[in-house]
Amino acid sequence: MTKTIKYKNKQINYSDSGQGNVLVLLHGFLESLEMWKIFSAELTKYFRVISIDLPGFGKSDCFENVHSMELMAEVVKFVLDSLQIKKCVMAGHSMGGYITLAFVDKFPEMLKGICLFHSHALSDTPEVKINRERSIEIIKSQRENFINRFIPDLFAPSNLKLFKHEIEELQEKAGKTSAKGIIAAMQGMKIREDKLEFLSITDIPVLFIAGKQDPRVPIDKVMAQAILPKHSEMLILSDVAHMGHIEDKEATLKTLKYFVMKCFE
Image (cartoon, rainbow, N blue to C red; front, side, top):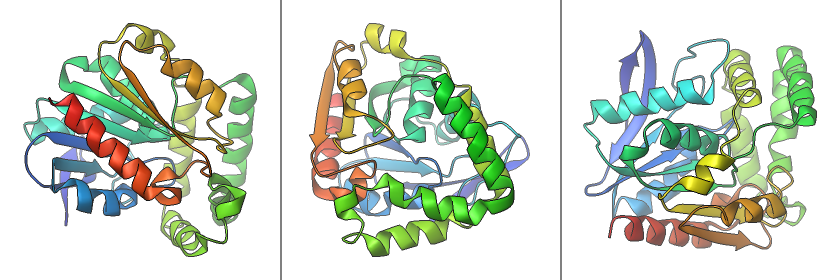
């Protein structure tokens, strides 16, 4: 069951279940807190799990024409403050990882650990920025076509038939997202800052989860970043692209669970 809270006269939707040490789960682009449904059901046996519909996604309102990673991090902070959360581990999938890095950069005292779940600390390259601009133009007139093409590309080719039902379900749910919300997130990702320096100086434990077949977050880039933090852990998945929570649910869930436990020891 989800709850809502008002921030700057806008509605934010979130879920809060379980007891004990707090794990915050942030979804990725074209997703919602529903992506964590299976994970939450298992992880609430061990932790208090909070997941949030980020601005413009799920049942949360759009705030601006550009949703910067910092703005989204401030929304997350507001929800946690309203729940009187002082310490947590935060895991972010893809775009959620960018927001996690923005959050830990602004509010490091709140984090016991972070997980970059098919995510990374680099800013967009000039080429990626151009591609985002092209995508924004497509979304303005062909939102549904963009969504239906985008989502299958997040899976390893060998997994397309295996997870056909899940892909169709993701397409259906993403189809409820407004063009404004999609574009605001894209604009925010396009202007996000590089966080490599933060990774190299932080004392906060970092877990990287990466797929060998991920075209969006190449494994070599993730491995280069994984050596930067003082305490770093990494799960590398062979037959997985960008959707490890679906493509290898057991391994990703187990790894995240034990990482969070260690962070609170």
